[in-house]
Image 1 (spheres, rainbow, N blue to C red):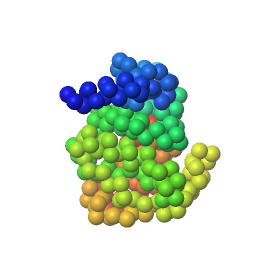
Image 2 (tube, rainbow, N blue to C red):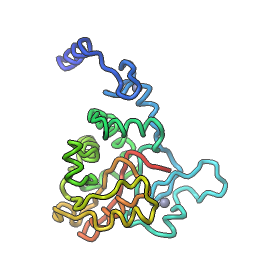
Image 3 (cartoon, helix red, strand yellow):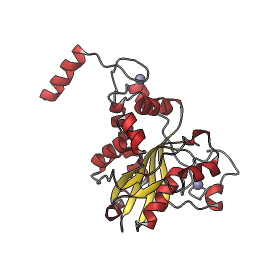
Image 4 (cartoon, rainbow, N blue to C red):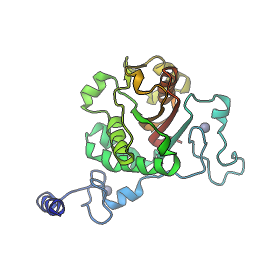
Length: 245
Ligand SMILES: [Zn+2]
Ligand SMILES: [Zn+2]
């Protein structure tokens, strides 16, 4: 009760505004997001590739049967068992991720982590996951930013699911180029050997769920999965906030 009063009082002194659209928070708010921005996050729904989570166009007559792997997954099976995303990397999600990562709006990890937790609970056998491992940043990048957005998201999901988070299980041992301007082959080369395991005991024999903000070609999570499996993880899946279709 006092918490509600305290919140109402703080709202009165400092009217809360949505970091995306600057509207005043009102009905349907998911602090710090306003109701319309929360509702407008481009949630992903089936059909998608059962392996990598790539969304299939809903009315494409030539598309594979629902639940079957997509063409790239058939050609080259990714090292992770499955990948799922909560949303497509649409305009609103892109803006939210940008504000979280580059404007330091870390409070956004709350609603975005909730979105991740809810999407994961709807599509994954959450009860079989032993631990969450966020994709690490290179220590110099994390120091410059002050946080790792994947750790913030994983912490939120872990709390909601009651699953432990292992933020230091993986380590990025060398800085990598931003993946944005690289093609698929260069992306793989860019991250090859970039990760190492600092706590093998944390993943050995366990079902590990990797957590990251955006899945583009999957090169980064594939390399992380390779390292985790080599260290004896029983199964490795991937859950990202967004996916580039
Ligand atoms: Zn808004
Ligand atoms: Zn696929």
